[in-house]
Every structure is written in C-alpha cells, then in structure tokens.
Image (cartoon, rainbow over all chains, first blue to last red; front, top):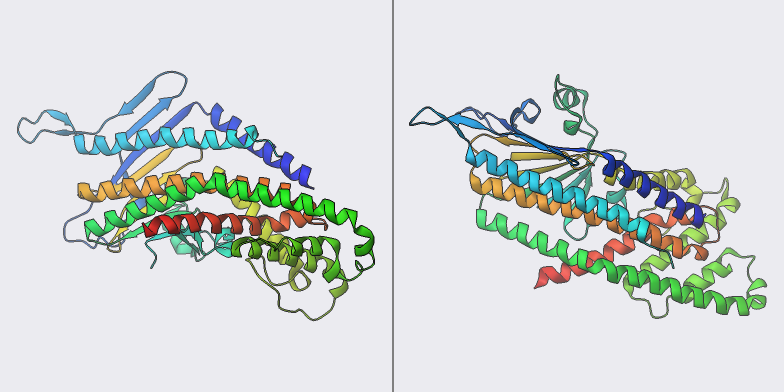
Length: 115
Length: 307
C-alpha cells in the first residue's frame, strides 16, 4: 500500500510537471470593469469585464504584449496608460515567478527520496 | 469575518474538515453550493471563461478601509506565512524523527512479540496500537494528538468488522469523522476528497479576491500553468491596487506552501505506514498527518505573529 502510494505520488507529480513544462505559452490578461458614477459598487459584474492589456509569453521564443493606450488630454495623441501597464507588468512578473515555483515544487517531489 | 479566508467549493471541503485554518493565516470555510441563478451570471454567461466558474477555491482578503491597518494585516499575514514556510523542513524532520523512533520501537516490540501475542486478540492490545501508545513518551501535545488519531484509526479499523450492525459510538475526531463503524464509507469519501484536493491544488484554477470595506475591488484567476487574468474596477485607487498585489502574492505563496506541505504529509505517512496494520490505513491517516503538519506550521506562524 505504501509503495503504491509513493508510486502514485511520483507518477502524478511527473505527469503534472511534464504537462506544465510542455505548455509553451503563458498568458497574462488584465481586464477592467467600468464603474459608473453614482451607481452601487457593492456587487460589481466581474464576469462582464473588458480586456485592457494582454501578454503572451512564448516560453521557447518571442513574447507579445497588447498595451493599453489612451488619447492624451492635451495633444489627443495616443499614449500608453502607464498606470494600467504597471499593474499588468506586475501581474506578468508574478505569473512567471509562480510558474517557476510550482514547477520547482513538483520537481521537488520527484527528487526527494524516502528514507 | 476573518481577514484572510480560504473558501472551498462544496465537495472539496477537505481542508476545512481537517483544520480550521491553513498555516495559521487563512481561515478555511466550505462555500455554500452555488444557486442556479448565481452560476448563470458567474460562469455560464456568454464569453465567460472557466476561471470565473463558482466551483474554484477562493483565497480572499477582507481588508478594512483604513490603509495602514490593511497594510499591517497583509504584512502580518506574509510574516506568518514565511514563518510557516521556514518551518517546513523542521516539520519534515519531526515526522522523520517520529518514523525513526517508531521503527526502533517496532524492532523492540518484535523482540518481545511472544508476550504481545497472548494479548493481541483484543483490539485494544493489538501490537500496532500498543506500539503507537508507547510512542507517547516524549511526545509533545501535537504529536500526542497525531498518535491518538493513528490509534483511533487502528482501533476503529480493527473493531469495524465486529461492529457490523452494532450501535454507533462516539470516537475521537480529528476531522476524519466519528467512527468507522458508523461511517466507513464516509471515511473513504473524506479521504478521496482529501486526495482530490491534492490534485486540485495543482491542477485547478484558483481565484484571489480583495475586498476593501466589504467591496470587491479586484479579482485574479490563476490557472495551473500560470495563466493569470486580473479584473479591476476602473477608478480603483493606486493604494488599493497595491493591496491586491500583496493579497495575490500572499495567496500564491500560500498555495505553493500548501502543495509542498501536502507532499510532505504524503511522504510522511508513507514512512509511518508500517505502524498501520489495516488495509487502507495509510490513506485514512493522510488527513491526520496533514493536520499534524499544519498544526506545527501554524504554531511557527503564531510565534512569528507575536514578534
């Protein structure tokens, strides 16, 4: 029973680690929901959020980011919405770190040897 | 309401059934089953993604409007979690030490087995139960509670065949249920749920939410390969955005720690498996060993919170 459990654990970890490692694209999306002034904000409709920025990281090659732009209030020329981009960039960094941590945890199970 | 809560979907309530909190940081609560009308608006709306489905674990921070206080809660949560993470190797060593003492005691017992054989017909005097009971010497409160849980599993498993049709009786419960006699199937179901959670913790989507003064300001869904989707309310103050990022970091670090601790629990019970003589005892004891591990980690977190 113990051997079966150990084998099951290792097999499950190996399968998941392999799958995570094989996934070639990491997608990070930032969306927003419009708060209309004067309306109740206690129960926002998060399911109906609209896309604001998106990054696709192809782990074996290039990456692509769709950045949020808005017209400048003075010139009318499109400019990057820096605040939103910062939020998005923080999420991208976190997603990369998280993926690495999960892979490390999975590989840790595979590396460990029972005494 | 807890500042940090882990709301588990109905049917995946294994953590909330084994421990009231995770790492002394997240209060566990099973969620109410989603009503059909809620499911319609949350997960099956046109264009809705599976990340927004209602049946995923939700790690939620309920923060006050006072920013200083909110930051203080998050900093304290992070400090406690870090203490738990640092305590993982020690907790693993303690499980290893218990396994070593158990093996040694088992060897001693083998040497005097002739004496035990004469008593072993009664469940209370079964060698495995006597061995577990002998390990109480030198055990602290948490370890003693864990040993009691293992004794209970052994005793109930041994008594179960004799109790078919007998009236149920109360038993020691560590989240495993009351007694095998009154609920062998329930035990098995709980264990299956527990193992399912192990897979769920890696494979499923999770949602991280930040509420400030009762208002949901941001929600992030994280897939098991690291895909992330964050939804904000327009006009959210920068300070609140920063708070959600802190919540997100705390939740994802906790999820990572949870996965590592469950893996240690599984490895720990495999090492202790020779203590359990009944078929399936290893699987039945998994929630108990995780409960013991979580208690050690929570204790470390509590000590960090005091400083």
